[in-house]
Length: 269
Image (cartoon, rainbow, N blue to C red; front, side, top):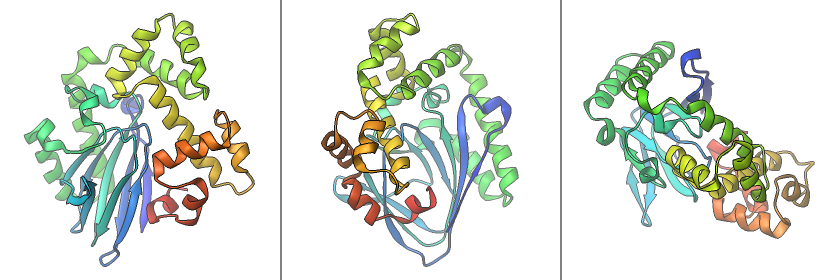
């Protein structure tokens, strides 16, 4: 398996966290679980293999162009065959600048991007299939994204403000401080909640919980950190609170997670 990241060009750094490329050889099959990240993704499937995700207790094949909304609970997936996946991982607040729909409508589902953007998404996917070089593929994706931004100009005027608010929220791992963040930016709690829901599809409280969970994942991969130390460092009231939230996002306790690392999780360490 191969997993690599590509940085966005300067015009898209305020919107795209990175692009990623995943390859696996034919015959390599595995099951995995996707955890909440606080970020939305678009994934172009360019290989001959198949991906499936769990829907109502049964696996269903994912579309050729996947739009991943905000995931707030563990989502089981499985892979078979030769995979080539090229993805766009948006910054927490930025996917809304590329889609007219209410972002919350995509929460906890994998949507066919063609159903959202129509022929333009299909055309881009075909050009990516016809273009083997990764550098050229990224060029095509960036041209597509910049064109979407030009079409959505009226939505991008406050991106810096939203980014500042989210950076404050992500840097404050104590949920009791959310009201202080609103005051610091000269806005009401109600406006902060509306702004974040508009741009992320999530409430400040859920975003904060996902952020603390992601911080705990990073610390868990360091064996020198005890569960108690992780809990307090990530703003949890106590270890039991940390374990309860962690299990809600992964389906596993922290100890069980470390004992059952899946292929993609190992690559992301």
